[in-house]
Each structure stands twice: as C-alpha cells, then as structure tokens.
Amino acid sequence: MARAFAQRYAKDDSTVIFASGVSNSNEKDPAAFAREHDMLGGYLADGQRRLVYFGSCNVVNAKEHSVYFQHKREMEALVIGSGRGTVLRLPQVVGRTLNPNTLTNFLRDCILQERQLTLWAGAQRNLIDIDDVAAIATHILDGAPPPVVAIASPWSLPMPRIVDLFEQVLGRSARRVLVDRGEAMAIDSTLSEQVARDIGVDFGPDYPLRVIQKYYGACHEA
Image (cartoon, rainbow, N blue to C red; front, side, top):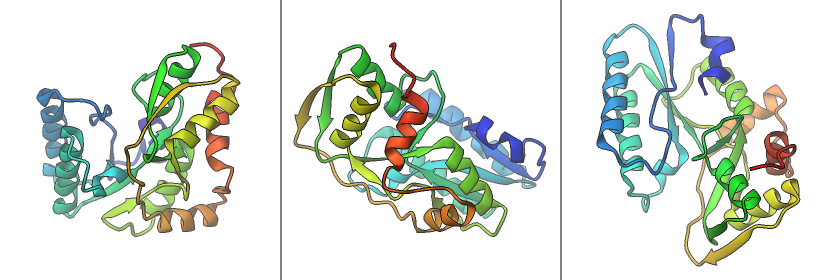
C-alpha cells in the first residue's frame, strides 16, 4: 500500500500515509492492535500533518463483531475525531504481495494446492486493483476530501462467482463446499466511480476478471 502511494506522497511533508496498521482480519493478538493504536495516536498528536488512514468497507456491517473490525472502527473514530485526517475505506485490494492472508492469495493457493474451500454462498466481496486505489485516492486527496470515503469498484460479487473467475484465470477447478451463510456487501462507491470516470479508470463489467488476470494470470505454481 505504501509503495503505491509513494510516487505522490513520499516527499510530501504535509501528509502521512498511514500504512502500518494490522492487515490480517483474523488477527486476535491484543499487542498488535495496541501497537497500531499507539503509532496512530503518535502521528495524530503531532498536530502538524494530515493523516490518511486505510479503513475497511466492512465496518458498516452491523453483523461484523470481530476484534479486528471493532478495532478498525475505533481507529477510524480517532482519525475522524482529530479533524485532520481522512479515512479511505477499502474493500479487498488486489496487488503483488507475498502475504498469504489476503483473500485473493488465499483463493489462489487453495485452488492450486487442491485444498478444500469452504465458501459462504451469500457473502460478497469487492475486488479493486491497488493501482486504481492509488490513482483514485490521490485525485480525491489532492482536492477537498470528505472525512470518510469508500474507494471501491461497482462490483460486489458473491464468493462463488469470484472463485469461478479464479478457476477461469488459473485453468484449475476448486474443491469447494458451499455453506448457506453470508450477507451482501453494501458500499457507497459513488464518489470513487465518479473519479474513476474522470481519470479514465475502466470499471466495466469485466473489471473483476481483469484484476484477477493482471495479478494471477501467469501464476501456475503454488
């Protein structure tokens, strides 16, 4: 995330791109959350620079009570309450990373390693290219950004459909088990869609497939 924003903000002393938060939504270690809280508080306390915090589109899901999302809500509130920060709420960002805990890396690994995938049939996820996140966010931040903005594509897809796309790109079949659980993903992506049109980001109907193809199309090994 930090690399994607470096070209614009690495030498901008007036803005802090806070990309040091807890990244694993399954995290439960209190020390990890405390570390982010203390670091974020330190930057907010200096009173000199604008801070950009990466939140999650899922914080608006009232049924999401995990420790991770409770923590994200608290961190967003700190940034918003400071009056000097902007929260960029993101869905499932796709890029080049070795982190096995990202949704898309996990799906790839399960399919290529023929591991069973238990899918919540009703759950939706929204995939967006890290390059598009940076382009859209930079355009918004260089203007007069609202305190909170969701940057997402128009396409929140059911998990089985996302796995279908991975199967298409990888040329392999997933060992899937469907469970009747999960909810739709409600994201107000109006602003990010408007900016995407203005700067030439193509959010056409094949966008999720193109994102997966870009980062996983040449991947044929676990």
